[in-house]
Image (cartoon, rainbow, N blue to C red):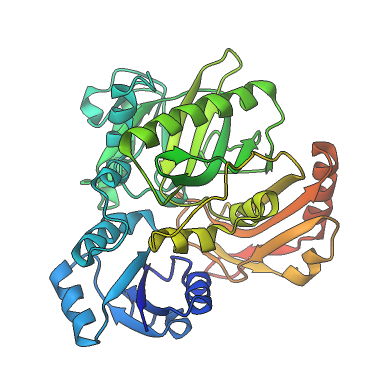
Length: 400
C-alpha cells in the first residue's frame, strides 16, 4: 500500500482528520513526530519518531527505509515544519518541493517580494536596530503561529523592552520582522491556489479584533459587512493573486490577513501556507462545499482540481467566536459540545476541557463555535444565545 507522511509537532498537525482522509483513499498513513507517545499515533498505520530540531534528513530517510516506507506524498499543516516538508518532498521527488515556496517560509521574504512586485508600500525591517517608524508591530519572522510573541511597540524604548523579554526567555536569537502598524479593520481570506491563480472562498471581517494583544477576539463573520472592508478584500485578493502568479504557486492553500482603512489603504498583514484555524474549515465547507482537509490531502498528492471558477458566495452569513482564557491555569468547561449543537443555526463547536494556559504571549483558545444566519443582526442574536449557554472557570495551579 502507498504511504503518505503526516507531520506533527507537540501533538499538533490535524493528524486524526488527515489520517481519516488517507484511509478513505486507500492510502497508508505514517505519522512523523518528535514524541514517542504522540497521542495520535494509534490513528495512523505507522509512527516514525524523529527529532525535528536535533536530527538530519538522512536520519529520517534511513528510518523510513528500515520500515520499507517509500512516501508518495507529505501532508503538513504546521508552518514551523514547512521547510521539512519541502526538504522531504525534494528527497523523494513528490509534490511540494517547488523552490518558490521558500518565499513563504519567511515574513521578510514575503515583504520583499511584495515590494519588488509593486504590491505593497508598507515599511518594514528585518533588523530592529534600523527601525525608525512607529508605531510598529514586531514578531518572529518565522514560525509565529497562534499570534505568539506578536506585539505593538510605540517607540524605540518599547522595542528594546520587547527584545529584552525575548532574551530573558532564552529567545534572543529569534529572527524578527518589524512592520509599520496599519490602523483599520482586520480581515482574513481563505482559498486554494491552482496553477498560479488564487481562488478566494471565505472572506472574514474581524470588527472586534484585540488591538492590544493582536489576537483574534469577538465575533468574526463572512461576508464582510463594511463597504471599505469589502473593497479591501477585493484589492488584496488581486495583489495576492499577482503574488501567486509570479511565484507560479500550485496545489497550495493560503490563509492571509489584511487591514483596510476607511480612507482606502489596504495592506497584507500575514500570509500562511495553510487554511485558517478554529472554525474556518467548517465555515469554508458551509459556504463552498469544499473540505479544506480533503483539499490539502489532494494537494499533497498533486491532484487537486477545481471544476471551473469558484464564485465567492455571500450566503448564508456564517460567524464564529474563539473564546480565549486571559489568566494562567486550567480551563474547566461544564457545557458540552452536544449542548451547543442543539442551538439555532449551529454549524459546529469545539471544546478543549482541561486546556492549560501556561503562556499569555500566545492565543489560548479553549472553546470555539460557529453559527449561520440570514443576516448579521440575526447572527449576533444567535451568538449571544450560545454565549449565555457556556459555563466555564479557570483554576490556578494552586487551586481556585
